[in-house]
Length: 224
Image 1 (tube, rainbow, N blue to C red):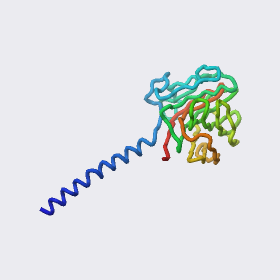
Image 2: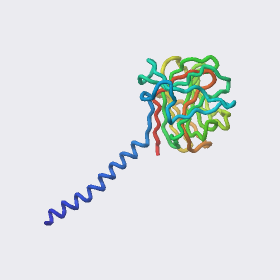
Image 3: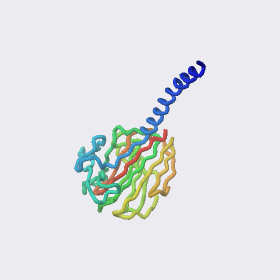
Image 4: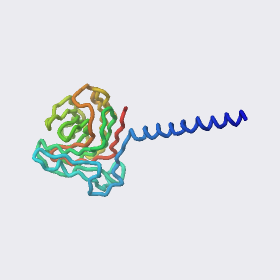
């Protein structure tokens, strides 16, 4: 009889522990998101993405999924394909439901063309399409820069001179905890700084002026 009671107690204790393990795994899985755009229809804007507006009210670029043999993870990329724009035309697209504060954020980008500007970057802690942090790489200027953008105006935080090859895939990664911002280019750390302007917000992608750029394998991890 005692053996039977012990067995029943053991089963009763094991049941909540099992559910607890499942819950922890689900929470861990939900703390990371990834977009490779391969299940999206070419020529469309993924439903969770929202294009910003330019200073004159027009859509901030032509953002769409493309089928291309240049994809880093075939068959699709997410691209900004509007090959014209004024000097301060910031082509912004945001993921409205991807709200983050402490994060690791990474994307692969492929500079395709551009005469006034080239390349692109990552947006994070965005309140909207005019207020956010930005890390961008520019093959024409051969540099990487990190900005805070306030009311549509960029404020340079740091610059790093870097050789950036055209029509080759590169990666940008941002790690932001509290005020500390660490930014990596192709796996190499290029910035370590502190800024307290924005505390949480949306993530997104960015190009400027006439830059045509492909993006792939966007990844977001919530640190806590």
